Image (cartoon, rainbow, N blue to C red; front, side):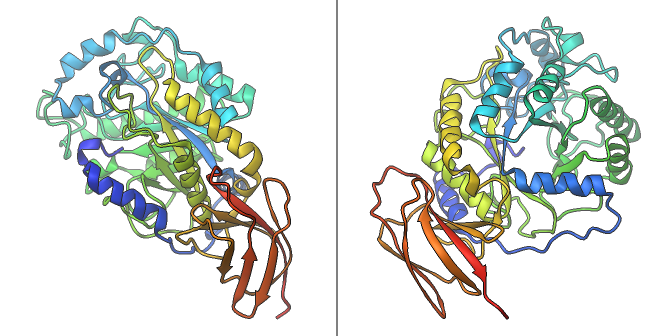
Length: 446
C-alpha cells in the first residue's frame, strides 16, 4: 500500500475525501467470458456480489506503532529489523475472535497480509526462516489458524502478498524504495521470482480453499519483468477458483480477476496514484479506518460510523466492494475504536444489507446526495445527504409500482413523468446515515 508520507497532506486529504464521495465513476461493461474457466467465472460473480470485506494489516511493524512503512520511513537496516522481528510475540491473537468480529460486521471475506514490504512472512514457509514460526518466540502460524476459523464460520480468506521486498537480497535491482536496508548491491532477480512462486505455492496448498491472492508492490519497479504469466498461471493451476487481485494502480492485465482501487472509488483517482481507467472485471475499493494501514498508536483520526456507511454505500453504487482495513496491535488484539465502528457498521447492515449485498450500481448514476443500487426489478435509492421532503431523480425506462422506506416500510408518495420520478419523502430525523427508499419497478415495453 502507498504509505502516509506519500499520501496527500492532511488538508488536501479532506478535499480528496469530499471529491471521492461526489465523483461519479463510469458505467462499465460486463467482462468477456472467453477462455476463463467456469469455476473462476463463478468466483468472480461471487466476489462481485459480496459487497464488503475486512482488510487486515498486521506484522512485525505493529510493534513500533508507526504504520506498516516504518522500516522505510525510519531507514531501519535489515539486520536491525531482523532483531525486531525476533521479539514479535502476539500472545493475545485469537483467530476465533477476529473472524467472529468480521462476521458480526457483515464482512463476506477477509484479506490479510501474509507478507508485507518488510519481507517478513506471517506464515510457516520453507522458502526462508524469516517467518513467524521459525524466527519468533510465538512459534505459531496465525494464517493457518485464521484459515481454519474462516472455514468454520463461512468467511472467504484472501492472502495479501507483497511483491516488493525490503529484506530479500535478490530483490535487485532495487526499486524506488528500500534503499536504506543495507543489503549488498547485487542479487538474482530470477531467483527472487522463484522464491515468491515457492511461497505462493505454499499459500495455495497448505491452507485449504482460499478466495485468492491480493498482490501489492509491483508499482515499486513498474518496468521490471515480473513474470506475471508464470505466476498467475501457477495460482490458477493450483486453485482454479482463486482470484488474482492486483494493487498495481494500472488498468487490468491478462490473467487478473478483480480491479482494486486504493483509497479511492473506481475511476476517481483522488489519491493521485490510481488509474482512472475502469475495466470490465469485478471492482473493489480499499479504505483505511483512520489514516494508517498498519497499527499506528498516535493516529486517532478515526472515520465515524456515518462516514463508513457512506463509503460502503458509495462503493456499492459504483459497482464495487468496500475492503475496510484494521491494523491490529502487536499483542494480537484489535483496537477498541476499530472494533466498535465495525460492530456499529454490522448493526446498520442487519437492516440495510439487502440494499448492498447481491446488488449492482442502479439506474441513476452517483449524485452528490447519494447513489442507487439494484437487484432485479428492485431499485434502492440511498439518500446520504438529502434532508428535503422532495427529491427528483432521472429514472426513466421503468414503471414504478410501489415506493417505501426500507427501515420500516413507510409508503412514499411518488409521481412519474416522462423525464423522471419525483418522491415525497417522510421527514428526516437526522440520525440515519443513509435513508433508503425501495422502488418496485416494471420495465416499460419498447
